[in-house]
Image 1 (cartoon, rainbow over the protein chains, first blue to last red):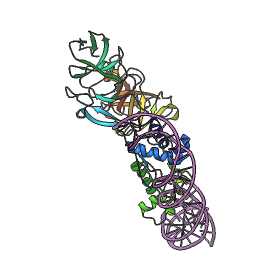
Image 2: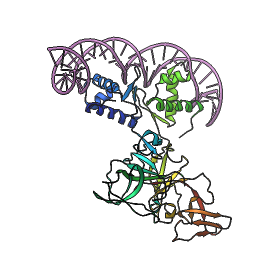
Image 3: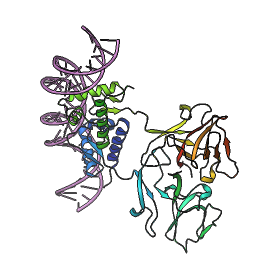
Length: 201
Length: 201
DNA sequence: AATAGTACTGTAATTATATACAGCATATAG
DNA sequence: CTATATGCTGTATATAATTACAGTACTATT
């Protein structure tokens, strides 16, 4: 799917907000009026271009017959067990997906990760809980992060982060801190934890 | 809001599924065709009747200008502090509402309740967490319930439930069990806890 | 230098759609 | 007995909306 131009994106957003506000798509004339075009045909041609790029479908003959093609990025995947080696978001790790309900929790969540083990019980994170993970939010000292150490994915509190020493703390009295030397072991901070869900109580 | 007739409800459902399927409402002709009317005017008059009863709004002049009036029952309220005396779901207790995202968590949730205090930390329920509460699901011994004791709302584990003795346990070593005699103190089990949300981690 | 894409104006025809008016039949409430 | 609501057919028309055709201008790619 090719990229939209600035103007085309503007029109696509207009369509989306029209649907959001009124419950149905705008006409060519509506679009032209909103963007100051003097001819509805300007809108028509933009729509054709956007359709050609795959973002919408146009039903011929039907008034307001604009259908938004889902771009797939409004569903959040739930990640179960992470297969060793591959990326976290690989197809085989996805348990299911859930629609992004934007009013609830943070909208920075890129995926949910199902918690294994009891290493974080002291901060109220239990086995089978789902943790909302943001890939982009950069991890702070003291925050809970998803880390990958030598292909094993784990959730811990980030205590120290230096060139030759990274400390990850399990929030459970029975476990001790994990110290990693990034120049020896492979370490990736996959993301920051921003929310928590528990389905069964 | 008056009740719809069988036929009117049929038409309202048709409109809803048309929107669900295609993303915009049907025309009078679409409705007539779907229901076998020979005149689009039959649809028109039904729409006017449904509008009169408040279930839809019709934008005059606009094609497919049918707006569904939300009946309010697809939003879940978030309850903050519960004012003493009144019902939990009273207007003044509602912090905000969130749309029901039916694929996520249990769809039995009637409302979310914001947790105050640390009496349930040992089962991973922390202050400011949101607990999904089902009013209808009948509470079992050993499950976590929302109880109202003498107009104070609290979240505890239900340990014992007899005619003259009800035991509620705080899941925190620093607190002791609460014993209530329902014939002396006013006790209502408001609901069962079925899910948990934590917004800040 | 030619081609294709972007970004419009302007006109006009055809079709889609809303909507008014005239009926007819049945049921229910005052 | 008479409104009033429901539930349609059938016709007609104004207007809403799609969409084709003819241009103009700029930019990027081959």
